[in-house]
Every structure is written in C-alpha cells, then in structure tokens.
Length: 305
Image (cartoon, rainbow, N blue to C red):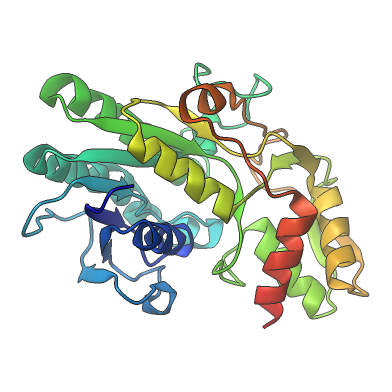
C-alpha cells in the first residue's frame, strides 16, 4: 500500500491494533479513533495518531483522509451484553457517522460486519448471498442487528451518495491482545487451561466454528481496502472444527492437566459456522494460511507471558 492517511475506528481494540500495525509497516500515516471503552492504549504501536472519540457522535477530522477502516463496535459477548444500547449505537449511528466522513473526504471505506449476520444458519457453508436466520429480539440481537443495519446503511450511502464503500463479514478470529475475560471461546479456554481449571464447553460441544488467526484476517482486510469491490465478502477460515475439539486442542498445546466440563447451552448459539470464501479467493486472492494448532500455540505463548 502506498503511503496515505488511514483512519481506523476501534483501532485500540484486538483486531484494530493489529490493523494499525500492518498499515504502519506498509508506510501509511495511521489515525486511531477510539472511545477506549473496550480497547486499550497499550495495544497501540508507536507512531499511531490517536483521537479519543465515540463514533456514535458526529465525527470530523482535520486534513485529508484516503481510507477508513470501520472496526469500532463491542465485539465480545461480555461487552455487547453489558452495553446493549451502545452496541446498537455503534452499529447504527457509528456507521452513519463514518460513512458521512468518507463522503466528505472522498475516502474509500471498509465496514467490518460479521458472520453473526447469518445467525444460526440454515445454509452451510454460508455464502454472501445467504440472507441469514437471526432472532431479532434474542440476547445476541444487539450485535447481530447492529451489523445488519450497518450493512444496509453502507449500501444506501453507496447508492445515494456514491461513496466508495466495501463490506467484509468477519468470521471467528483469534490471536494476541484478546482479553482473558472477554467471553470469547479461545481466550476463555486458554485462561482456564493455563490456570488448571476445567474448560467450560456450552452444550454438547458439537457446534462448529471456523477459526482464523488474526494475521490472516488482517491480510484479508487490507486486500479489501486496496480493492474497489463493494462486498459483502466473507473473511474467515473454511476449516470447520467443533468446540469440543478446540477445547481438547487447547489442553494439548498448553500441556494443561485441565479436564472439560459441559455447561448449559447459550441462547441462540449457532450450531454450525463455516464461510464460503470463494469470492475472497477470486477477488482478493486471499485465503488463510495459519493452521489452528500453529495459531493456538503462538497465542498461548503470548497469553502465558
């Protein structure tokens, strides 16, 4: 990527901070916009400009902006269940404000959506053409519907204002800088395994996930940023694995003596999750490269340290 001024909303979060790092390596001038409600300044590499702001409020920045990556939104269950209204505001008002900024600056903007727009899918694997199977009033709906609304807002801005906007649907991603208590599966399993506690598997553990290491996901995001494709495009690992197998592999890579304890199933927990990434392979020449065991070992070393 040629040197340019890039804005990353939610840049102090898990995924956003890795994106900021990669952009700096590519020679870009990077500005992080973050409210720091779920992100941390400690995640940010040196050289990133910081604007402390809530994207749910009108957003303006001095100077030119060439590219915006909109990642700001509570993404872990612990956060969006604690802040349901703020999650909806980030997906609704936040996306609107970011698109307005892109319109004023004439910038390319990539909106981070999620595999959760597919809900508990009745199509497998999930293609971008699938409309989803979402409970609009369930406990997860604040996140699912915020992202679905954000996609609709993006399409509307593209149609009405000609904004150069793309949508990516991000599947389960993991790696360094995930918080130990953020409620997502892999940091929870690692925390429990390293403490010698039972790994808590919800339900029978036969529900599946498709887990993408963060370095791979960042490559896909930046490939989307360099393209002019409108999306939506799935970004995720098509290697499907059961939650029970992830728990067992976590015990193996950490050398833990923990066992596995089954607990009550979560409401509206998707039974199967696997992206069809044919479009990403064709348009972005992208596919994940880090196998699950290698990614888990790398993350576990960082987590233990």
